[in-house]
Length: 369
Image (tube, rainbow, N blue to C red; front, side, top):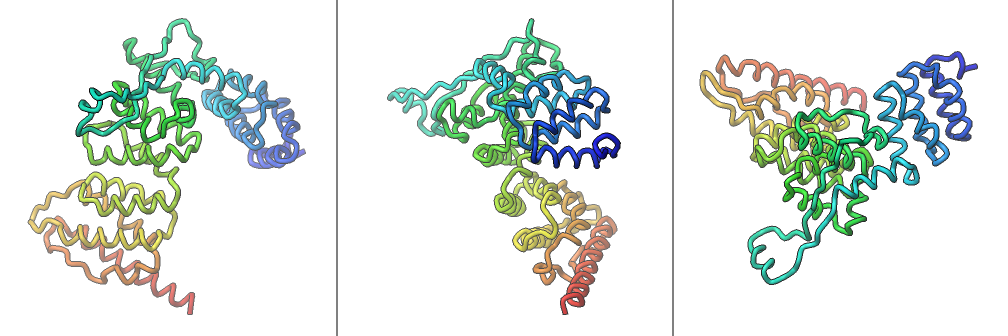
């Protein structure tokens, strides 16, 4: 009765329980009501099939790939690509393999001379842009149309979409090359942007840990190389969320202590992705960086604040409840802020931070005594 007449949450919970013990029955239930379900319901129920996904689900998922809802089609594609034996997976790999090849570096005395003073690479990537004419990209799980206005940009867009759906582990296995070396080869390629964006999307989509670390290292380096690659922010955010917690902590501390304003700004921006309260190491690094910034605020009547300083300013209310109790003693009760009108908001906000920490310290003492 719950499956036929319950609300969406109840029906999804019921389907999840059935899927856990009898996956074929859950799929059959969903297939029986599929055409009468609303798009939001179809999308929610389709996600249940990820539990105990098997080749037996392929016919149903192939049908879902023709759904009228773009989100449902995309979710069905993701599930099919998780099945190594699915026809979609094989078709996509065939297209991807035709697009990308790796040429090992020739170790000759001439190449050694040319490589003097340069970073050594194991080889180079050769890219063959996919043709779009006369091909039904929906059969490859790509349902969107290329936004490009010319043939080259359209082909590059399809290259990025194809590679973003293939697990990057496929390339390190196929070429027998470490992820860091393939990333370096992509950086040297004329198609570095599409390749690195695609591999980043694929690594986070497929949760490939061996690739997430090297990709984070490369993209975080773009913070210190302005103009190297536009649109790095969302990619860095996705990679940061995929990093192991200890690595994420170490990277935030490293960026907070960086002398580069862009790196510090990014570190402040991603602090909100860490669970509250912050770890003692994160909390101490934040307070230390904030103190340093406050000491160096411009002491003029009309200070020009940098983006880094504004990022810290906007993060202070968050820090008031995310700082761990081990850092309470690190927060000054009074801050040395220049008495100029333009910095009055800073004085007020830092006063509230100190006051919030005092209240939290008092409450902790009362609750633990």
